[in-house]
Image (tube, rainbow, N blue to C red; front, side, top):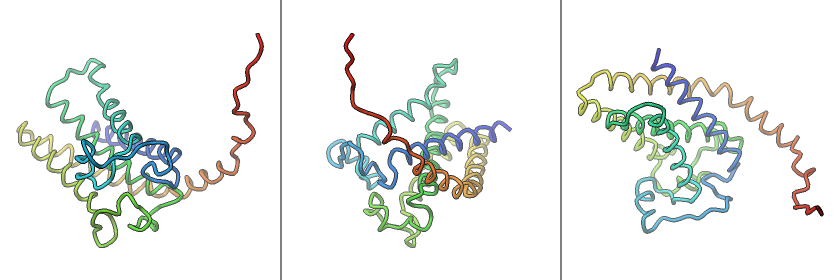
Length: 210
C-alpha cells in the first residue's frame, strides 16, 4: 500500500510540473523563447555530454528547485543518512523521467504524432531508436535501473530492489492510463486560450499622488 501511495504522489507531482512547464514554454520547448541563457561549454559541458542538450538558466534553476524540494523531508524530522539520500535521488530521477514524458504527451503542440527528431530540436543532436524516441530515454532508464540494483547490493536489501521495480511498474501503468486525459486537457487548454483576458488588464505602472 505504501508503494502505491508513493507512486500516486510521484505521478501527480510529475503531471502537475509537466503542465506547469507547458504553461511556461508552450510550443517552444527547452525554454526556446524564454529570456534565459544557454551554455554547452565550460562547466555546462558535463550536462551537454550527458544529455546532448545545452544547459539553460531556466533548466538549471528548475533542476535545483526540484532537487531541493525533494530534500524537504530532511527538515521534517526525517534523519539524513546515505540510505535515505539515495532513496531521494532515485525518486527524483523517476520524477524527471515521467515529467519529461508527460510534457510531450499533454503539450497541445506536440503529442505522440509530433514527437519526431525534426520537431524536437533539443533532442536532434543524438541518436533515435528506430526514429521513435531519443536514445537518452534508454540511457536515463538504464542509469536509473543501475542505480537501483547497485544500491540494493550495497545495502544488501532485496526488498529495496523489489520495491523500486514495483514502483516503476506502477508509474508505467499510470503513464499509460493518463493518456485518456490528454484530449480533455488539450481541449481545456485551447478553450482557456480563447477566454484569455490578459489584454483587458492595464499593465502600466500608475503613480498616484498621495
